[in-house]
Length: 105
Image 1 (cartoon, rainbow, N blue to C red):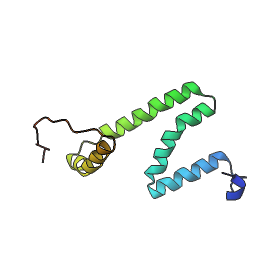
Image 2: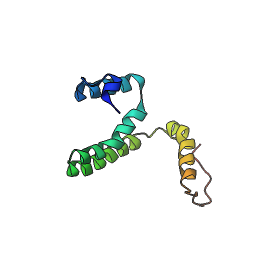
Image 3: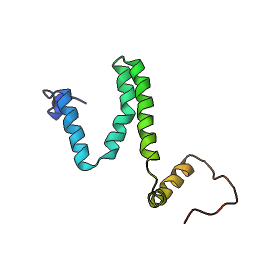
């Protein structure tokens, strides 16, 4: 992407970052933040920070784990049920057959 085409050639990277993050916050654009989380380790590697790149992966997975584990509301979990099912189906993860049918409803 050419900075000149978009009019950002004279804008500092820090300003671009602040503006993009603020816009994503205002729009509640989780996809943007998710994309950043995925790109940070690669950006660290490109910058020559291979140790930081590995640490970024660990840090990002830790943040994700914390976000997911803090969600304990059964109603929220139930609302996300279709998402879990779709993900498992997309990845051919057949359900375990336990004979248990109680969903906690």
